[in-house]
Image (cartoon, rainbow, N blue to C red; front, side):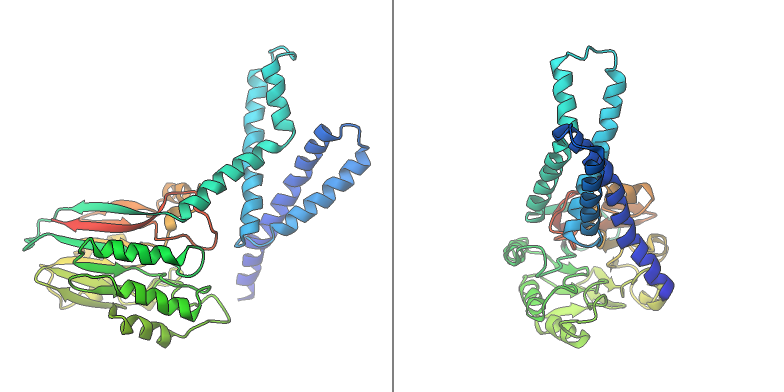
Length: 376
């Protein structure tokens, strides 16, 4: 446990602070050279060190919004450094008196570009976090369905934290107009920063969605507030709030819906602890495999196992599609199921970007959404 906390402290506190502090020293020296070219070197060094230490202190907690702001400015500044180096190489034979070239140099040296670019990025991110779009997928199956079905997937609402609570109420009414056959809540509906009142309100709102077969819920890694020493509600209170509003909890359980569908809900994988829950094969044991099989699993894992077990559709959330660019892009490069549609054998996989983000009040990658899936 001590080793875990040491790695955590180094990765998410010391490294961001050290990275920002070291880079900021040289960044401030350059800016001082532009605004105060006559300043004594000793004074410039002292001022740069003091400013760099202050910025490093702001970057000492990776999970805070202020750290994310400082890191954005730092990374954008590094990118402008790289672009400036390329242009210097390409334009080194141009005359020094070129007005356009001199203006570009001044913009770079004054240090304003990273701030302006970051403000634009995060301004878009704030706007993006407050808008939820409808994403639709169509899926045809060779299984003999008696009719077409419409499923709605809602995941990662993190209710009562960084998004206007009225937005969920508005979208719940909108989803009812879709006339869904079934609504799936795929985890992280609430989290550590959700109050008990907001937790109860979330399930009241989601339980009010009108659907043919009802609303079903699988736990995510945050719902039970495992990452805090001061939970605002207990596990039993969470379950009671869901059930009181007609929501069925599926934790390693499967239910038949109508004549054609089978919906199974997984216990959360919880930091990759796949041994603490029933396998897909165990979960589907004794069920009618001729039905169209849907598995709801908060984290998009065990795709091959689902395909082998004969699952037709796996729905997940958890990833937030990266939320902060370029996290999602990097996840895709490493083969993670990050966002959108995937295929594993005969199993279709749909990973939602979530109804909102987590932790930070902005989203610079993908969008907030609820998902409508039509089975034909």
